[in-house]
Amino acid sequence: MSRRKKPPDGQSTVATLEILMAVPGHVLFGADGTFQSTCLHFEGFPAILWDTLKWFGYQSPPLYAGRLYLEQGIQTCQVQALVPPPPAWPDWPSLGIIAYGLAPEDTWESATLQLLTQFCQLHPVEITLDPIGLFPVRNRLDPAWLDRVGNIEVLATTCAMVTISTNIRCMAALYRLIELQGRAMTLFAWTAADTHGYLQAARRDMVGQTYQLIHRGIQIHDMQDRISELEGEVADLVDGMIELSEEKMEVEMKLAVANAHLEEHQAELEDMHALNMQLEAQEDPEEDEGASSMDIEEDGAPSPTHSVHW
Image (cartoon, one colour):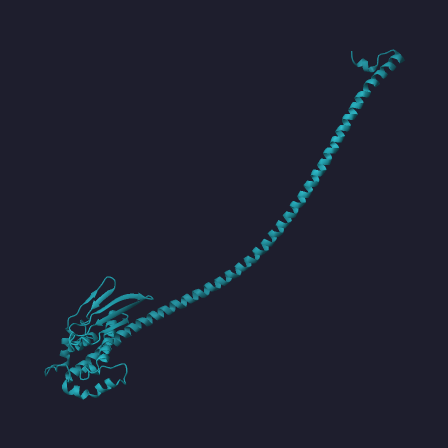
C-alpha cells in the first residue's frame, strides 16, 4: 500500500502545487563564490525529492553546497550533496552526488534529479506502490520499473490525485530543467562561436607570423652566407697580413745587415780619410821649405807665401 496520504476530496492539484511551492527555503552565498541551499524556494526536483524523503522518515531536507568558478574562460557551477540515512532506517546507504552545470539553478535541478534516480535505484521495493516509483529510469528495460508501471492501476485506485500531482510536478520540473539546460546550451553555442572566431583570427595571425618567420629565416640564411663570405675575406686578409709581416721582418733583417755593412764601410772610409790627412800633414812642411829656397835663389824676392803676411 502506498505510503502517501490521499488528499481530501475536492482538493485540486493546483492547490497541492501551491502548498508545495510555499515551502520556505534560503540560499547563502559566500564571498568566494560558494553557496549553500536547501533549494526549497522554488518548485522543482529539490521539492519533489524532499517530499519523497519525508515519507520515508528523513528528518531534514538535503543541503546543496556548490561553488562558481571559471574554467577555460566559461562560468561553471559545481554542486554536491550528501544525504545520510534516516533515523528509522540507519542501515540504508547514504545518498551522494556531484553535479556540474552553468549556473546554480540548472545545476541544482540536475543534482537533485540524480539523487532522486539514485534513491529509486537503491530502494526499488520501498517505492513499488509509491507514485515516485513511476519516475523514469535510465534503463527502460529495468524489470523493477516495468513492474511498478504494470501496477499503475493500483496507484490510480488508492491515490489517484497524488499520483497525478506527482506526475505533473515531475513533468514541470523536467520542462524547467530542459529549459535551463537549453539556455546553457545556447550560451555554450555562443561561446563556442566566439571561440571559433577567435581561433580563426588567431590561426590567420599565426599563418601571417609563420610567413614572416619564413621570410626572416631566409634573410637570416642570406646573412649567414654573407657573414661566412666576410669571414673568408677576413681570413684571407689575416693571411695576407701575416705574409706581409713575415716579408717585413725579412726586409728589416736585410736592412739591418745592410746597415751593418754600411757602418763597416763608413768606418773604413773614415779610417782611410784620417790616414790621408796624416800623410798630407806630413808632406806639407817639406814642400813649403823647398819652395822658399827656390824663390830666394832665383830672384832674391820674398815668396808669395811670405808676402801675404806683413
